[in-house]
Amino acid sequence: MIRPSGSRLYSVLRPDARRVCIAHSWFDRSGTGAADCSLDDVLDDVVDSIAQRIDRPTAIAAQSMGGVLALLADLKHPESVTHLVLAATSGGVPVRRLGGIDWQTEFARNHPSVPDWLLTCDLDLSAQLRTVVISTLLVWGDSDPISPVAVGKNLAALLPQAKLRILPGGDHDFAHTRPQCVAPLIEHHLNGFQCADNSQKSWHEPTIES
Image 1: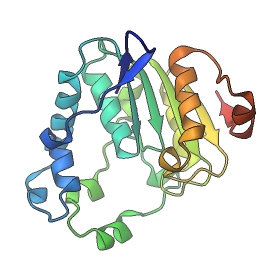
Image 2: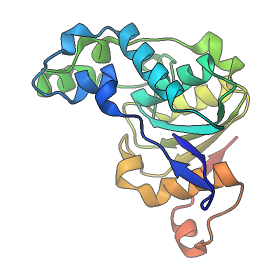
Image 3: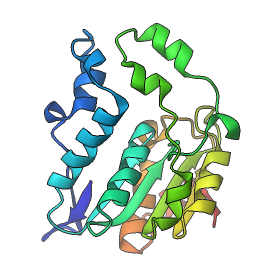
Image 4: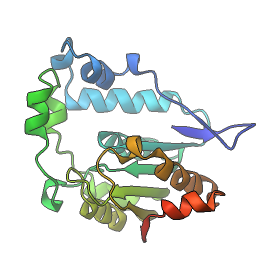
């Protein structure tokens, strides 16, 4: 989460993962407690955790599965969220029908303690997304087989105030591997100005789709 700060334009908040069911299930590699969480438990815990930390107008930035949680947070608490940044997420739309690969089978084999809800989640928020009227930045990589560009375009069509930015060569982990590409886009989205480093901006300039 990102919210206005006094000395800086924005400060970054991170929910306490130890108090959130999703973190307990996902990060506990021993598997302890993983079977105790249903998808509804996870969504309720995370959304409530986010809401408890919002004490002023707040932007939420999220990647992959986190994008679903960010949208749910806005749907539940629209008065508290000013902007959304969604990167390489399903966003609660049918990713498989839009060309996404089956990543769950191999992932489950490599991470046997992962809870079932993460692998079977097929939450469809399509009917509700038109009610998300805040400014939303969608960032996608054009080489992401898990959440392909078609997913971003679908979300851009459903979300009334969304803009889609496509990073050439970006895979599903581009927010981690190419932060120098993503950070200026978020900064511009939140503050309404271009990155001052014109040479870097030119090198990382994404394709822009409205």
